[in-house]
Image (cartoon, rainbow, N blue to C red; front, side, top):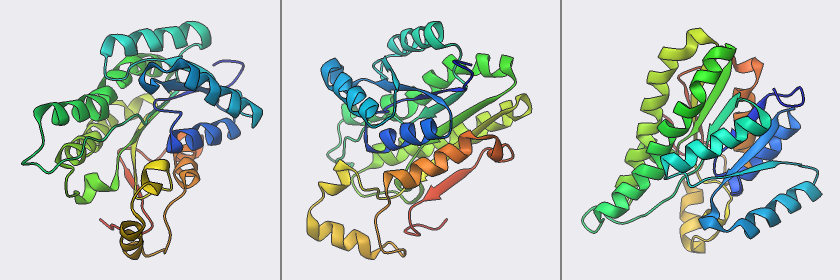
Length: 250
């Protein structure tokens, strides 16, 4: 523990959903380390860190290119040296490289697989032994509604995010007896820069498909993640929790 608190690491923590997750975990008493890459733009990350500190969220930052296993190893080792073992891992980093399958290149396929699926293996591998030694841990993998229902132009993304939950279910069976839970969270359309950039007419059509009548907020996802990270969720493992306003009901 660092400063008497459990340490939570959030990959892709400076994005819209990532920021909300970091803020909520801090509010729930975790010491939060924010993983970022941001194309190597350290100045952008430092500005984000200052903005968050001004709002009352004094996060620690950790740089690493999630697509590079060695960079991930260096990142996690630096976190452990400074703050001790990671108690809660949120695998939130991800990218899209959309194209219809007939036009999709292998690079578009592979890049999404590396960032969205391979990184879940790499990051979890780097923290799991410490969790086993501690007899406690939380691994929360962020997937997507499109892993559950598929999406036109996203064979790569849908496949990768489906793989995330397969990983969750298998690992949960291996480590649940060690005091570690492993779960998936699958958001639907959430009010982020990406969703807000969708053409108004398309947003209107999407909204018609959501029974609750609104897009999700990053905080909606953050509340769920924080609950799964808590002691209260100790009997939940191997689950895929959809948070999509009823847009897809499996």
